[in-house]
Amino acid sequence: MQVRFGSRKRIQFTDKKHPMLGIISTMIAIAAWILMGVLFYLSSTEKGTSGIIIGFVGILVLIASAIGFLIAIRCYKKEDIYMTTPMTGAILNGFLVVLCLLLYVLGTVSY
Image (cartoon, rainbow, N blue to C red; front, side, top):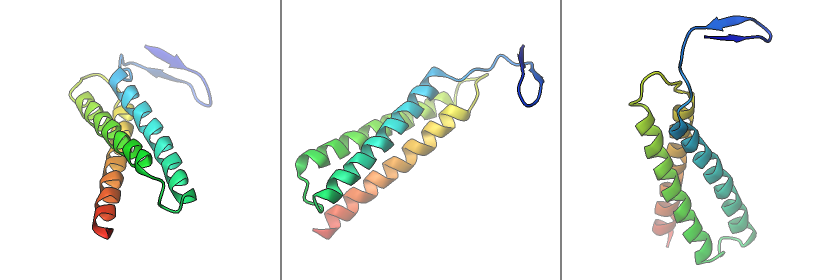
């Protein structure tokens, strides 16, 4: 039982908690989005000719995001947890995986 004070007072009769894997998945998603933003910035300053290092780091972001998505999906099987962090991790990582795959497909088709 947990009593919260703030703008309103409520009593919560639950033993739910945020799963550690959901928190890890969300942290992976946040780090991957930040790194992808840095990669976008670096690639735009070089006018698209930034080299193989940027592409390799992009592939690492894709792999990390896919792992984060799978970790978030594994959290859905657990009981008595809050679904906020697994859902956030799954959505953010899923969008990033789709974005990375779309970028690589468009990059391959354009050459």
